[in-house]
Image 1 (spheres, rainbow, N blue to C red):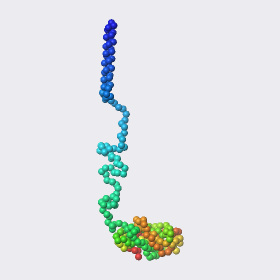
Image 2: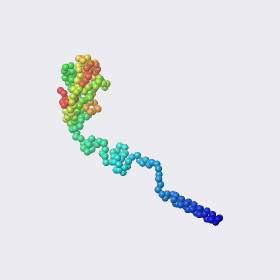
Image 3: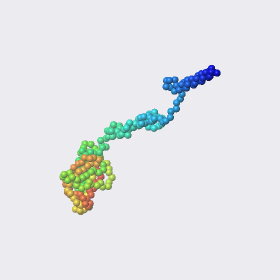
Length: 234
């Protein structure tokens, strides 16, 4: 009876040992490698770099990010050619360029009064050795001996600007018109000079003003300028 009990106890110990051995085998071999597939929960981490790669572009049709200030590879730059000739390197024809202040002289022609108006031609003459062009309205301003402005700047009268081609020595003129102050009753001042700015230029030409008082404020004090036309206005 005692013998049978010992056999039963040993058998139970053997079964337990076999179970423990099987459990160790299933968990691993001591090398850290799992013997079966593992399941991980959670979300994938975002990719680093902040933008799609070239491979991403080919796969999903989106455009890869380019460095700041540069177009994507294979696309033309939007910056214009530095030489102004559509990137061909060709030099624009000299005859097609505008006249610059340094190439011109200015003068004020004789008054041609009529119907209570004073009408002066403001003349620009090409003093250079090349042909150039002027187009539109010149700028004008009356100044005193110290260079201070007298009255508001002249107003552009209605007109259609045309391109005037000036060969060396040729001129273009614009009409400078205002009401006679003695008739209009406008307040007046006597300028020392008229500053004239050719179209699309910043530098001015200074012409001595010898035609007396001009309106600077009050009734009918506006001074008008017309578009440039070929000739001297004589």
